[in-house]
Length: 249
Image 1 (cartoon, one colour):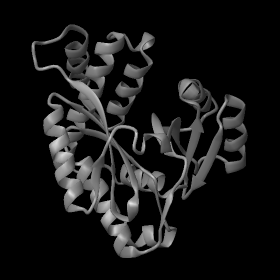
Image 2 (spheres, rainbow, N blue to C red; image 1 turned 180 degrees about the vertical axis):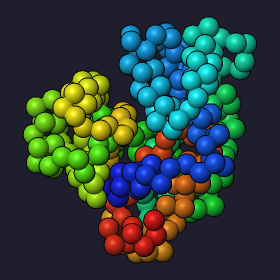
Image 3 (cartoon, rainbow, N blue to C red; image 1 turned 90 degrees about the horizontal axis):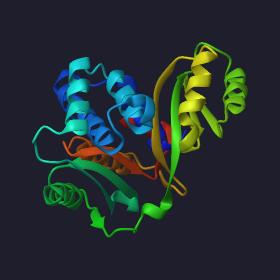
C-alpha cells in the first residue's frame, strides 16, 4: 500500500473527532450540491451524486443535511454559487500536490493554499505542473478480516477490478473509474463489507521518504491543507517507509 493511500486509510479508521465532524459535513454537502447541480437530484441517474451521498452517509451525515444539499444544487436557494477547482503545487522533499477544492471564492482559496505551502517550504505551481503525474482510479475500501485474502483477490478480479492491496485487515480494490460502482456492487453481493468507495488519483511515480523529520513535515502539511474548509481532497506522490509511518502516524 503506497504511503499516501496508507495515510488516508489510517485517518478514515481513526474517524473524525467532534470538532471536525461539522467541517466534514460541510465538505460532504458541497460535493453533493455540485453533483446535483451538474447531473440532477436523482442519484439513480447521477453516478457522481450517488458517490457523494455514499461518502456523506459513511461519516453519518444526517439525512436532512443530505436532502438540503441536493435541493441547493438541483433547484438553487439563492446562495452564492459553488465552483470546483484544482490547484497544483509542491511540498517538502519535492513531493507533488494535487488539491481539489469546492469554493465560492477562488481567490480566497488560492490565497489560503499559498500561505500554508509557503510556510511549509512548498509552493503553488501553474496548471499542468504536476497533474500529468496522477491518473484517475476507482478505489473501494473493503474489510479484509472476514474472508480469505486470496478469495477476495479472485472475487475482485472476476468483478472487473484491476488490482488489490491488502494490509492490516484493510483491502484497497482498484478499478477503472467507470466500473467502480459495478465492482462495489459485486463485492457486496459476494458478502464483503465495503467501507468506502470513491474516484481517486494515483501517482505514476513516487517520492520515497525515509527520514522521520521529513515525514512529519509532509504529513503535517497534508493535514493543514485538508483542514481548510474549501479543500475536498489532497493527493500527493509521497511514499513514506512503513516503519517511519508507524512512528509518526
